[in-house]
Length: 479
Image 1 (tube, rainbow, N blue to C red):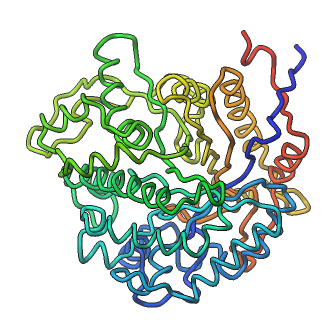
Image 2: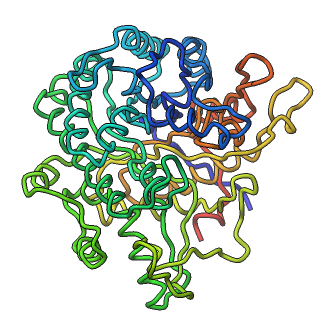
């Protein structure tokens, strides 16, 4: 059967992403400027693969010009990264700016623009200042919310004329889920109520920063937008039976709609509020705060999609001696015969792109959205080098290609999707896994002073961006 050529819209974003803490390293960082991630690394370095972490990362702080030139060579339309809150200020209470770090950000943004790459900037990608965690309990504190707004104001003042794409958080649910719900990361405290308070306060922080953004008139002055980057992985029930459907719906409430609904719709699902009340994990929220969330929804959202979540109703009794966890209602389900990424342990199911696209169209007012992260992590990629020392990552090319096909199908079906951002531009440090799983279009060679080298996928992505078309088997999407 002949292949069908699918066109990529001309204004469709084809970029790549990363973050400050996963790339910059600690060059120039003051002793008082540890982030939550830095604190975790210092206190639990042994859990980070081979000891690598944020201390050097990819040394982007010193090599951003080199990296921006590679972005231009590949042809990336956009690059998303973050500003490290813990480093941008020297005084978090009063909002005093660290001029050295601010000058780096200034130069880095200018370099991207000069190379024809549109910067997309996130205000917090797990970079909560450590002192705010230790002093106030981090995002459990409403005071920290106010300090975040103060920080955002300083950032907007500096870069608001040049940056057109702003985001409050990347994956705002992740840190507290790992720390307070599952207790598998520093400081290891199982506390479901605290988990939910962090969830609420981050939604409140997003709304307050959106409010500030609107008051300052950045959209009218510069044509810029502000949103949030969420990771609502698509959830599938094991079966059509009511008990499995109920399990999937409740999983969805706690891990998808808990951020999607307040960010886009301005309110929480009634059923989620009822479940919180039932299990005594209701967050503290003033009526005025709920009104701020209602009145200040985002302009658009970035969604990080990697793999499907499959759930079923519980088949074993819940231990009533432990605090409530949403898993009270579900168990994870492994689909027989599923295709797997054996290195990361994640199912590969590209149809999540279409299913998410239709949900955004039908349930969220067809708001503008884009894929903010999607990618494939692979161990020991040096095993795939050819004689010219280029990594032959055909598996990554296939992964991107398959996911893009389903995403384009979603656009054909009327979903308001404006782009695709690959995770990641270069290999970079991940929490605990460090450089174990490689995601980049560009290799970071740890044995050669972190030198950069484009992989086969980088050249393939280059052609995709240039030609804006992708080949698809007729029987795959159009049955």
